[in-house]
Each structure stands twice: as C-alpha cells, then as structure tokens.
Amino acid sequence: MKKLFAFILVCCMYGLHAENVLHDYLWANYLQYGGKTESANKLYQQVLPHSVYSYPGYIHLLYNTDEYQKIVDLIPKIGTQFDQDPTLQLMIIDALNKTGHSADAYSKLETLYKKFPYNTQVVFARVNFAIAKKDLKNALDILNALLNNVGPKSNLFIFHFMKAQIYLKLNNPQQALASVKESLALYDQFDKGWLMRAMLEEQLGQVEHAIQGYTTYLELTGGSNKQISDHLLQLAFRQKLKQQNKKTAFVQQTCFEQTVALFEQKRYKQALAHIDHCLMQKPDSTKGRLLKIEILTAMGQFNQAAAHIQAWIDKDPHNQLWFDALHLLARQGAQHNTIIKTLQTLHTKYPTSLWAPLYLADLHARAHNTSEALIYLNKAYTITNDTALKVKLLFQQGVLHFEQRQFDKMVQILEQGYALDKTHAPLLNLLAHHYATKGNNIARASELINAACTQDPHNPHIIDTKALIMYKQKQYTNAHQLLTKLHKENPQDATILIHLAQVEHKQNHIDVARSLLQNAQTLTHAPYEKQKITSLTKKLTPR
Image: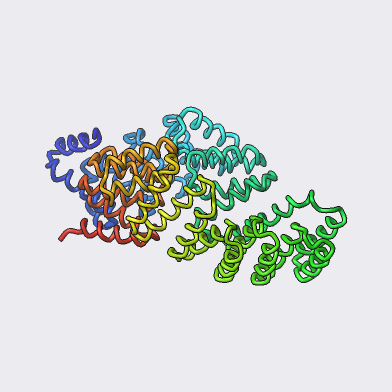
C-alpha cells in the first residue's frame, strides 16, 4: 500500500493525472497475469518514465518472459529502492546468475540472506547456491537456522527434504532418514519423500518399512512407475522368503541358495528346474514356493504362477500369504481377469475365507467395476467379526456410492459405520461433506467435522471439508484463509482448487476463480468433479 501511495505521489509531482497513470499501471498488471505480455509491455513503457515504483511489475514481466539481460540493465536505474523486497531481489539475483554475473549474484544473495534469514524463498535460494558450490556444511547450517527458529509449519517440509538430500551426499543415511521422516510428518502426500524414505529404509535393512514406503509412493503417483512397481514386488517376495529362512533345514537352505544364485544371474529356466528339484525334497516349503512364484513372474508366466498359488490355497484356504501373493501378481502385470477368476473360484470353494472377497473388492474397484466391488465388500463385511475392519469396509462402500452419486445409499452405509465407531476420521469426514452439501444439514455437518478434526487435525481432506462448511455458512473470509493455506501445501489437489474457486467467486475475484478452475480441470480424474468445474465455469463466463 505504501508503494501505491508513493506511486501516486510521484505522478502528482510530475503534474500528471495520477488516476490515469495508476489505471495504466494496474491494467498492465492485469494484462500481464492474464498472459497478454505484449500489451502489458506497451503499457509499462508508458508508465516507467514517470515513477520508479512501476518497476516491480515490469521486472516480473521480464522475468516471466526470460528477458534476464534487460533486468540486469535496470539495476543501476532502480538502485537500492527495492532492497526490502526479497521476491524482487531474488529475480534480480537469478537474472544476474543466468547472464554470467555469478559473483555479483552471490554477493547480492549473501546480503539479502543477512537481511531475511527466515524468509523461505531467500533460504531456498541461499541453500541451493551453497550446494552448487559444494559447501554442504554451510547449506546444513542455513537450513538448521531456519528450522530451529521457525515453528513447525507444513510448508517447511521441503527444507527437511533438502537436509535429507544433503545428508545423502555426505554418506549419512541415518540422518537422511531422520530428516525425510520429519519432512513427511509435515506433509504426508509428498511422493518424492516417500520414495527417498523407502530407498533409505531398504538400504538400512528395514525392509518392512521400505515396502510400506514404496507402496505409499505408488499409491500417491497412481502406480505409473513400473520400475518401482517391479522392485516392490521382488522386495515383497524376498521379505517373505527371508521370514522362512529360520524354518528351513540346512540341506534345503543350500538348495534354495543355489536357486537364488541362478535367479540373480537371470538364468530363469535353470532356476525353475532347480527350484522344482528343491520342492521335490520338501514340497511344503513356503520359501521354495515363493521362490518358484518369483521365477515364474520374472519369466512372465503369470497363469502358471496363479495356478500354483491356487493349488497351495486349496491345501490351506485360510493362509493370507498365498492370497497376498496372488494379489501381488495382479500388481506386477498379470491379467486382472485371470486373477479375478482365480479368486472367484477360491471364494466359491471357501466362502468363509475373508481374503478372497477383500482382494476381489480391491481389484474390481481398481478396474472401476463398482457394482462388483460393492458386492465383495459386503461379503467381506458379513464374514468378519472385527469391528474396526467392519467400519473400514462400510467406509469403502460409502466412497464407492459417493463416486456413483448414490447419496441415499451412501449415507445409509456411513451412518451404519458411525453407529459402530464414532472415531473413524475418514468416515466422519465423508459424512460431514454429505450433510454440508446434498444432506443440507449444516449443524450435523459441523458436529461431524469437529469430531473428525479431533481425531486427525492435520489431514488436508478434513480441513478442506471444514472450509467447505464455512463456505456454506457464508464465512467466506475464514474459508478463504483455510483454503489458501491448503492450496499452498497441496497444489495438485483438484478438490481444494474447486472449493477455493467457489470462495473467490463469492468474493468477486472472477479471474482468480476462473484460473483456479482451469488448473483443477487438468488435475482431476473424477467425472463428478469435471461436471462441477464445467458448471462453475459457466457461472463465471460473462454473457
């Protein structure tokens, strides 16, 4: 605001019509952020001679269009006028660095860091400079100075991750693991953090935790990384093999070790023949069976692997291990229909076994066969006596009904789960969302979301629903504060973007709302959210 008053004052001193000049400056900003850089540039050229306070907007424009040399040429003109603006100074520093003036850039950054040691943008740039110069100890000192003097905030997760990266360079995996855990404690949706954590856990021999880390990474990224998916499957099989080592006789151990050696040499046919020889000596060996599945999987012989697993389940239908192995085959590349048919056969044979319906529900849900997934979730519900599992199964049914827009069925199922357990945060959240929207019961929604917040106060999905309820209560300022913070922490979450766009619309920030919806459109895969975005966009389009 001070800069704006100064801008007007200078215009008046020059005998200009401040209102017209200010209008041109603001309009140039509007055009710039609307992507009309050429028109914005023309307006800036008209305003620049009249006030130094027009330079920040112009430098932003030059920076966004990669005209770094022009920024450097402006340095003598603006002098020290904007030394207290760290964002602008960082653009100038970057421009210096990219035009070959690295020494000047480093000097300016040092000065800026001394002024703003706890500004996250400045710290981020300063640490990267130190890393580039291989001054890793200094980089750690800078990060620790920030993290030790600023309270724990979710947007600081990246700085803990940077510490982990530095510790890796220093060959200190234990400290790297501790730092990446702190990063994920602040933001548990950080996929790269989970990948680093899994790799470090594996390196340190903590295989169970590594498997959990790789699994979470694949879930967050949609399972698109085949290399990690393959590695996870092999790791899972190896872990199960390791668990069997103590149960294996010494003679059999030697036989299996020879098989592993052949497998690691990728001599799969010889390994398969050798494991069959081992299993002839001890046909019930769990370790030998797992080895055989791993070999068949590596050879792409999924049908044979599934047939062997089915035969072993026939001998022990309540052993979860073989159902796990069958499900892993589907994640590895086996045709889902093959695994589904196998599991259906097993479920028919052994209707009281819990594992077949659970995995059938999962596979059908992943294939978007919602009606089949619901059938098997309900079957699993009738089989188990575990209350906690019953609530989770009801919640999953509620989610599927929600995705199908079957709200009456959804609320009936969720209320059934609520009667069993009033502390299951995801269920409370979804039920609160329903009553805030289709259910039209804000009082009930508030009661439920407050209970959910008590159980899981940092969950972004729960906080998002809380903001939605505020929006419904016309508490637009409070909702905007919550959603703006959430968006910074979860920039790829389409639901948060949609809700923030709704609030911006109510505050008459039409262009901002439209931009948020355009971003959400590229991120969402849910049909109902796509429809909602289309409907909201029509409201924002002038007629």
